[in-house]
Amino acid sequence: MSDEKKSISLPLANPEKSVEAARPRTREEGGDVLSEIAREVADHAVVLYMKGQPEQPMCGFSARAAAILASYNKPFYAVDILVDPAKRQGIKEFSSWPTIPQVYVGGEFVGGSDILMQLHENGELAALITAAVGE
Image (cartoon, rainbow, N blue to C red):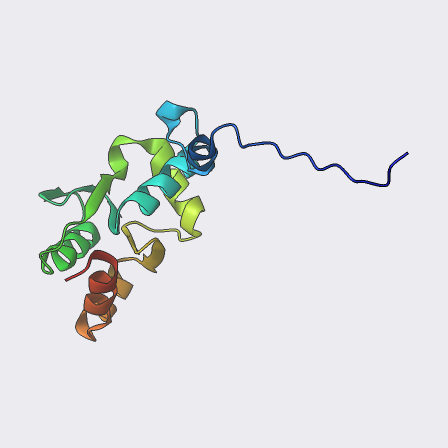
C-alpha cells in the first residue's frame, strides 16, 4: 500500500449559470414580489416607487419626489405601485418603511418624500446620485 494521497478536481458545470442563479428573479421568472423588487433596485442606479408615473403622479408626495429626481437630469427608474397591489405591499415589507413614495439610490434605501427633500436641500442627494449614476 502506498501512502500517496489522490486529489480529485471537479470542474464547475457552468460558472456563469451559477452566478445568474443567485440573481434575484422577477415573478415572470418564478421569483416572488420581494425578489422582483430586489432585482429592480439592483438593476437601476436610482429607483422611485411612486403612486402614478413621473409624468402623471397620483399624489403630491410622489409628484414632489419625481420632480426632485428629475431636477438632476439623470435617468431614474419609476415604478407605479398603483397598478400592482402585490408590489404596493411588497415595497413596504422590503424597506420596512410604511409609506410611498420610496427612493433607492445605488441599491440603498434613501427614504420617502420628506427625507428626499431634506437631502436635496442640503446637497447630499446630488452627491448620492452622482456616485450612483456618474457625471
